[in-house]
Length: 94
Image (cartoon, rainbow, N blue to C red):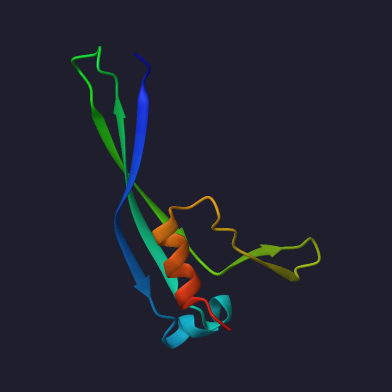
């Protein structure tokens, strides 16, 4: 059998842009997504193994240029779980 990896969303937390953070990322809320990855092989008695990973998502990615100016590009969430994409679409509206 082949090794399989299964990823599931364990938790999504939304943080509002408040106080001094309101000017960061154009005042948009940020997300913290907790994923759980499970690696399994039915032929291996030591598996499954699970690992937790955390991703922080902001609406815009800000890049510093050589002339000390900033460039903002929208964060691409198309590779994220559909639930994460739906939450981003709901909170990052114009």
